[in-house]
Structure formats: C-alpha cells, structure tokens
Image (tube, rainbow, N blue to C red):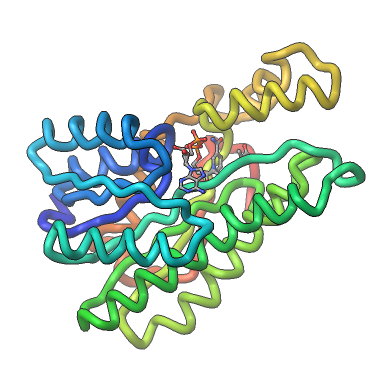
Length: 259
Ligand SMILES: NC(=O)C1=CN([C@@H]2O[C@H](COP(=O)(O)OP(=O)(O)OC[C@H]3O[C@@H](n4cnc5c(N)ncnc54)[C@H](O)[C@@H]3O)[C@@H](O)[C@H]2O)C=CC1
Ligand SMILES: CC(=O)C(C)=O
C-alpha cells in the first residue's frame, strides 16, 4: 500500500500493458484516471478497479492531441481531487522496412509515441507545479529504445526519443521535486505483438506466429513477458523507493537486451 491515496493517470489503459499498470497501481492503493480511445474498454477496466475498492474515472483522449491530454489531466484532478502520477503508456507499433516507410507513416507514429509522451510530460508537470506538489512522470519506452530493431526502425527511433525526453525532462523538472523515468519492456504478449507478428509475416513471408516465437526463444528467462511483469517496475517507479531516481530508463525484458 505504498501509494495509498495517490491519484494516477494512465494513458492507453483500456488493454494490455496500460490495463496491467492501472490494476497494479490500484492494488497498491492509488485511485485511477483511465485514458484511451475506446469507452467500452475503459469502462471494463474501471469496473475491475472499483472491485479492488479504489476509485476510477475514465476519459476519452487521443494522446497525439495536446489539448485532449491537458483536458484529461484536468479531468483527473477535478474528479478524483488531486494529481500525483502520470504514466504516458499509450503507443502504437509499426513494422515497415526503412526503404519503404512513407512520410504519413512516420508522422503518425511520431505524433502518438513521441508527441503523446511530450504532451503528457507538459500537462502533468504544469499541473504538479500549479498544485505545488511533487509528482512522478513515467514514460513507455522499450527494448527498442535501447537497440534499433530491423523492420521496427521508425518504431525504435520513437522509443529512443522517449528516453531523450525522459532525460531532458528529469533535468528540467528536478528543482520542482518532479521525477521523470521510463520503463523498457521486452516482448509482452499483448495485441501489439499480435499485430507486429502479423505484419512481420506480411513483410518477410515468415509464417504467422514465427516472429513472435523467435523473439520469445531469445529471452533468457524462457517465457514471454506479461503486463504484470511491466506493472511491477512501474509500481516501483511510482512508489517511495524510487524517490531518489530520475532520468532513468530501466530494461525489464527477462534477459534480451543487456545494457
Ligand atoms: N507489447 C510489447 O511487447 C511492448 C510494448 N511497449 C510499449 O508499451 C505501451 C503499451 O503497449 P501494449 O499494451 O503492448 O499495446 P496495445 O496495443 O495492446 O495497447 C495500447 C493501448 O493504447 C491505446 N492507444 C493507441 N493510440 C492511442 C492514442 N493516440 N491515444 C490514446 N490511446 C491510444 C490503444 O487504444 C490501446 O488500448 C506502448 O507504448 C508500447 O510501445 C514497449 C515494449 C514492448
Ligand atoms: C513492441 C516492442 O517494443 C518490441 C520491440 O517488442
């Protein structure tokens, strides 16, 4: 119960890693603002959180739109009565050889994966400063933010960019008592990897399922990652034991990329 009574906002909370993070933070005592594009999915996660005895509120926002992200943070504060933690988790994948990628594809993924994180950092930091309280900002990077992966080149570059924003924001906001860190998962068995595997099959001709299998076979601990594995690290970054940690982007990947 290390974050009891704290108010946390999680983007991309309707499924996958975001859902796992929201449920873990609720178990650790936080009340949750859940942000995503699909109301029905958000409602289902909100019911799970309420069943744990915590409050949950939902808000539809596209993280690539700065005004919508600011509105989500305002909604969280107004509805739950405070604002302490933001997890900028929403993101999309893109499997495309670098030689084929189009300007429209680059723009779309940068608007969501990079600008979405930047607007979340801005909105949360402005809110923490206005309230005069310390806060935690936690961003989704990836193993692909430490290593550029073939056919995931533009996606990898967005996750490197998240690490850069995390480091710079940590330096700019430390004097206000705000810490900024990222989490770098490996191969997590969510819809994102179903999509990556399907696209890899289209691009390389490998059978469906083969790319995911190959990646999982490379994991030292011998199994795919779960959203709960990721959520454990995020709970640490949100909690009191991470008070002296900022600007970092730790890997949690079962042993796949070593730094
Ligand atoms: N699945 C994996 O193996 C890994 C995932 N990650 C990162 O973790 C984060 C979550 O990934 P998953 O849960 O696996 O993905 P997912 O595809 O299962 O879920 C992503 C969620 O984000 C939401 N979302 C997408 N675009 C949005 C937008 N513009 N505005 C608001 N919400 C939006 C989707 O509706 C969805 O609910 C992403 O940033 C991803 O890049 C990092 C490393 C590995
Ligand atoms: C989705 C993702 O970040 C990887 C590299 O698995």
